[in-house]
Each structure stands twice: as structure tokens, then as C-alpha cells.
Image 1 (cartoon, rainbow, N blue to C red):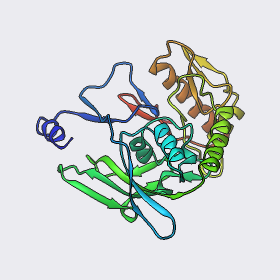
Image 2 (cartoon, helix red, strand yellow):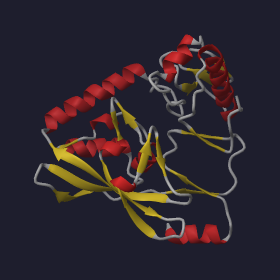
Image 3 (cartoon, rainbow, N blue to C red):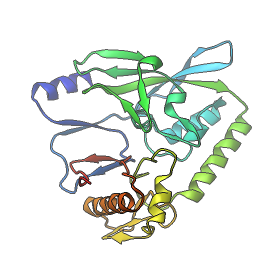
Image 4 (cartoon, rainbow, N blue to C red):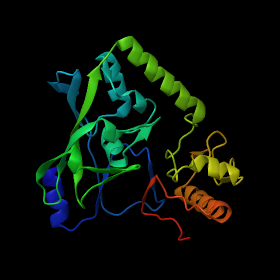
Length: 264
């Protein structure tokens, strides 16, 4: 990774780091530059045990969340259950501070290892990491390579039961049977984006091959042959209608590459 970053920076070539693309919308025109994707991560291993029963485990950024949840069940590690059903890699989950049911990545993260903008390998402890709602503030050019997460030992059966409960709850509430770019907008303070979109009468509204989900209005699903411009049209429609009716400006949770929303 360091050598690759040295090359693209020396050539002043635009570059992007891609996880598994589960919360990403890319322009129909594509993007100019180099897209970097890490793959084939090693299986995580516990590296330190604490007297209070906590276990510190290092995980490479490219490791998938679904595999990590399964790894936790198999190895009787409690603390990963809230990630059940969230797609993508753990690197993307760190970058987005992914979370559900009252828990976020910041709650289990102990440190991150990164390549700095100067190409140095650096380590930042939890107190140095600026996690926010669905975001992690990184310095320009920093790339997450791995990180340590704190878990605890538990009973495999109870861990599996809780994981299955949260997965079932997520599957019932979200349109996981259709392709999408994940939750489209961040929840505003003391409210829910999906509820505001539904109250605005937009649930089920479509454009081209894209549709605001009838199951959960904060998802825009691909009904077949949807294009990025269709999704963008619906996102702009949602922001305009919600702002007009409720005075709330919804901020995107999905990352946009090569495209942008209209100013309101």
C-alpha cells in the first residue's frame, strides 16, 4: 500500500480507497483516477487478554463484517452482535462509524493502524480518534489498514441467539432483498430520516429503475437497471420535500463519488 501511494502521489494522480462499496454511489460517468481496494485479509487472532475478561483482537481493514460476526460466534466473542446484517468491510465500518441498535464501531475500537499522507505507518489510540455520528474524521490522505477491537468472552449459544435476533429484526425492517446503497440519509437530531421521508408522502416513489423503498423510506432500491442519476434525482427530491414540509435538511449518509447533490 505504501509503495502504491508513493507512486500515485508522485504522479499527482487522483486516488480513491474502496472497501466493499456497500454505502457508496458512483457517478454513471465513473471516476478519473486509481481506485485502491485491499483484499485477502488474514484471519484475525486475539492478541491480548485482560483480567476483566476483555479480549483485544486486531483485524485487517478488508475483513468483511459478515465473516467477522461469524468468527465471533465460532470463537465465543461477545460484542460484535450489533454488526449482524450490516454489509461491507470493517475498514468501511470504521470510516463510517457504522452502528445499529444503540451501538457503534467507536464503542469497540481500541486503536487504528493507518498509512499517513506522508506514507508513514502510524497508530492512533481511541482518544486520538475523532468518531462522530456515521463518520470518522481522518487527516487528508490517511488510509486505515487495521485496528484493534475490544470484545469479551461469552457463551456461544447466547451470542448466536442475540445475533440471530438482531439479524431478524434488521431483515424485517429493511429491504435487504433488493440491491441498494444502504441508508441514504443520516438521522437528524431526535428524529428519523425514514419517518420524515414517509411523512412527506415519498414512500414508493420511483424514477427510472430506482425506487424509495416501500419497506423503509431511507433506502433507495434498485428495481432493475437503475442508474446513479435516478438515485440522485430521488435524493434531491427527498431533501427538497422534507426541507419544505418539516424545515429539516437531511444530510447524506451514503458516500458520493463523481456526483453531488443540489444545493438547497
